[in-house]
Each structure stands twice: as C-alpha cells, then as structure tokens.
Amino acid sequence: MSSPRRFSLLLFALLASVLHCAQAAPQYVVTPLGNDPGTQLKPAAINNLGQVIGVMRHEWGEELFLSSGGALRSLGWMGTNIPIDINDAGTMLYGGKLHEADGTTRELPLAAWAINKLGHATGEVDNRRPVGPVTYAAIYGGGDALTLTGFADRWNTGWAINDADVAVGAVHGWIVGEPAGSPSFRAARFEGGRTQLLESLGNGYGAAYDINNSGFAVGFTSGHAALWTPEGRLIDLGALLEAQFGDGAALGSAAYGINNAGEVVGRYGHEGGFLYSGGVMYDLRSLIADPDNMFVDAEGYDMAGGYDINDQHQIITRGIHGWGGLLSLAGPAAQPVPEPASCALFGAGLFAIGFLKRRRQTSRATA
Image 1 (cartoon, rainbow, N blue to C red):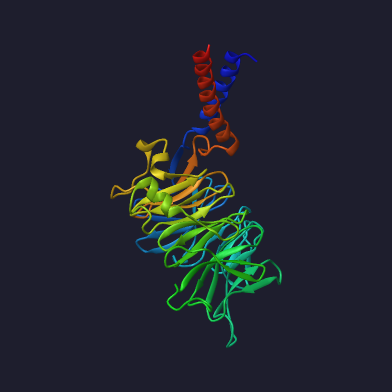
Image 2 (cartoon, rainbow, N blue to C red; image 1 turned 90 degrees about the vertical axis):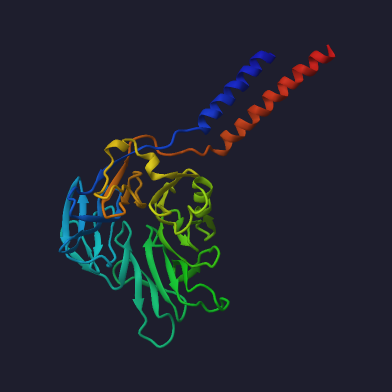
C-alpha cells in the first residue's frame, strides 16, 4: 500500500475515534409533577413505566401520591416517614402492605422498605429471642419464603432489592470484630442469608440506598456519594464530584438511585443534583434542554438532587422548598466514555501518524 493511501486510512481512523470519544452530553426536559403552589411534593421512587410515588404535603397534613400518565392521585393520609416504593407491574408498597394495580392488597411478613419486579420485598424483622441481631435484615421471596440475616447485637435493615433478591441497606451499631470506635452505621449487602459490609471511606459511616440487577449499589460513606461494585469495592463518587465541581462539592453528597445501565443520580452541596453516566459526572441543571421553561418554586429555587432513575433514563428530582419534577430524556443517553478499543485506536492513530511523519523525515534526510 502506498504511503499516501496508508496515511489517509490512518487519518480516517483517527478522526472516527475522535468523534466516538467526544459524544454530546444528554439533554432532558423537566415536567412538574404538580402545579399547586400550596402543595409540596417529594417524589420517592419511579418505575420503568414512568409512574412516580411520593409524599404530598399540604397546609393541613401529608398524604401519599401516585403520578401516572400526567395525572396526580392521592393514596391517602399516611405521613412522610413510612417506606414507599413501586415496581414495574404498578404494585405499590406503603402502609406495610403491597397494593396491587387491580386494587387488591397483600400483607407482608416484615417491615418492608422496597420491592422488586416480582413483588419480593426487603426490610427488617424484630428478633424476639435474647440472642442474635436486634433486628434481622429480611428478604421476602413470596409465599412463606423469608430469609433472615444480619450481625449479632445489631440492627440490620434492607433498604433496596434487585430482581435477583439481593438487598442492600445498613448495619447499625458496633460490629463484633471491628476495632473500638468504629462507625456504628455501615453500608451492607444481604444475599442468601449472608451479610457483607461494603467497602468504606474515612470513618466508614454510611448506608446503601439502591442496587441494580448487575449488583452495583449506591449510597454514601463518610459524607461522600458512593458506588459499590458487585464485589463490594468502593468507587468514590464524592471524589469525582470534587474533581468536576471543586473542593467541597462532595460534602454531604449521596447517591440515591441507579438503573440497570449503571447511571447514578444523587445530590451534592447545598442544592446540587448530579447524574453519573458513562464514567462522567454531570450537574443536573446543566442537562436541562429548556431552562427558560424550567419549573421554579415560589422562592426562586429549582432542583436539589436526583432521587431515582429508571431504565428509560427518567429522573425524579425535588426542589429545595418542596416541588417535584420528572426529567425525561430529550437527546441521546450519555455515553461520553469511549470503548477501550476505540481509545486504543485513537492512540494507535496518533502514534502511527507520528511514526510515518518521522519515517518520511528520516527518508528525506538519507536521500
């Protein structure tokens, strides 16, 4: 192959790699979940159908709500501190029961915090014996299937569950075998009757809030938003927040939701929300495609964190003073980190072009 042709092919490969490596950030449009200025909304969970469950606060009290197809429906007066969740079948968890889409209800044999697509749940069960855990972390698999686990003399709680019945949550209290002065609240994974403490940062204080079907979990540790691999190793999202947004960005940060594509949402700083996707950290505000139409509450604030994300890339967000919004993808999903093969091609292209240029120079010098 002639040198000009070889050079042209390498240049084409280089340009293709550059284009692949520099994909645009995703763009979202925001839709308020409600427009009543006298009502505060705190969305808590979203399923893959875009249905949102949360808490609605009025001057006269608090109630649960379901947002579905653009309509907001009250679920009754339940208060803000009860566990609530919704799965892809439209089954809702609240008031200690599963509420099916057809209106029927089902009692649960545990204090449940979350459900998966099968209607299986995780939470906790009190230990009525004088030995063992104060509370067991519990996984309910339907029927009479109830798996209990946890460290002795500790409160153990599952706060999220994936479709493989793997749960994550927290172990509360000093743990046997840990040094004196160890943190009393640790992120943990519960699977098949086994309890695993997730890798921690600094003083280790933390908890896990969500887990996807690949076993990646999110939460916080030592004041930093955290992402854990299926093996329990820590990826410090707080450090990435500081690298992207400056010192102090990690302070008080937490990751609240993860989808099956591995995208993570959470909050940082006083009023910041983040999306971590494809290895890149984004501020949620910067991804709004129509900022002029963005809903702002009566005190001029907009969003303050992402609290869940589904497999359709929809994100639920809360305003500082109690508004709730749904972010829907308006452009391509974020894929800013190139595949290893493409980056290798990019580097090889640079090297080859430099090599050919040097070879031509050497040939001219010896001619």
